[in-house]
Length: 282
Length: 218
Image 1 (tube, one colour):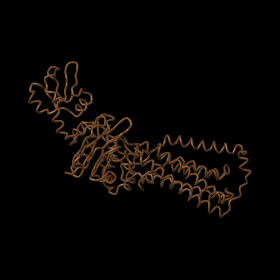
Image 2: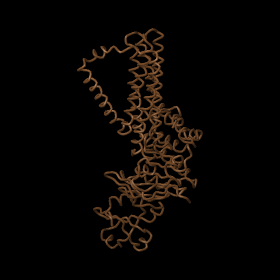
Image 3: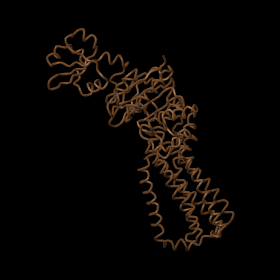
Image 4: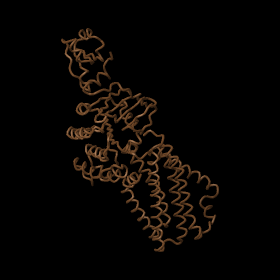
């Protein structure tokens, strides 16, 4: 399985913020979910990968080549529709068919039909959900091999999100295809992502298979006295409440065998983020 | 690159229709004899100053730059597409003004077609000059800041001209110069020189804009 994305030592420095160094790979046929709080650097990472902002150091290899040469095979969806409100839906076809060599007018029309978008409609008349669908149709109609999605499902209702997530799953059924999707809606990522990368204050804190992450970490709820008995090597972070103490535990299976009396629950991506950001690091 | 040029024209579709309508209204006013035909040329300069600013503002509104740089076009071609769009707008406007001038001449409202041709060429060159100065500002500072800066510069230029003319006697001094009527030969050369000068100005401006946009983080 070849990597569709290979990021090596990528750094982007601003006056008040530094992203990286970031190293990560996204294999073909997979979806990587990029999570992190606002301002963690998710959008900067995607922009740096594409050369929209110039990286200070490091490089991104997309589809085996440099980003400029790979753009013909990349589809991008940002957190809002990037087509002017003064355009009509069918104008997107007129413009992009002259930009992408591989633009498939028939496929674009098929997506418009599938998403219930009329070509004659003005973009300013479209709801947010419809605009995101238009962006997705535009990102897919040149038959890309890599999709870069920045908060593409934000603000959409669950039905639309579910439809779009189905599109993503269909897209990566081809082993040559991959998706990098940044999202705050971690439930979407739990549904479709194969890998999770967690950015915090510009640094990559976690990057692993989603199932392995969710299986290996656990949430321990116990008393402070119980927590004091636990081997510190298992504890990633703790949160102390008025009546109980919570801890993020690594190597959940081993922990359960070692401490059968204590209850460890599976952890969600949301909980993982909150523990790491707000918990006391062990 | 044609896709990007087309995008700009599609965005300006409604504005261009209004522009055409206003030009015809002004031509009608010139036809009625209230204003001279030169007013059409002045309007052309004003409109050609506004249109590129509008394109930049519309692009900023929908974050097009971020998306545009993710397309397989490249920064140089992106800037080149914008310059070609502006050049096409200038050519379209000069041609339209010339056509209206011919119509006004046929209707007997333009006394000297040679003079009108020269005026039209000079106005066209001014439009190109204005854009050649303004576009690098738009690339460097974005539409909001560039607009303020540009109007500041234009205001400064007007003040300088007034400061120069005032001690000489103002407009009366200009009238006293009694410039010779342009000959037919001049009327042929002036448009050609204006077109060439306009192209050189735009080419220099393009190099500056490409430099600004090439190093810009969008």
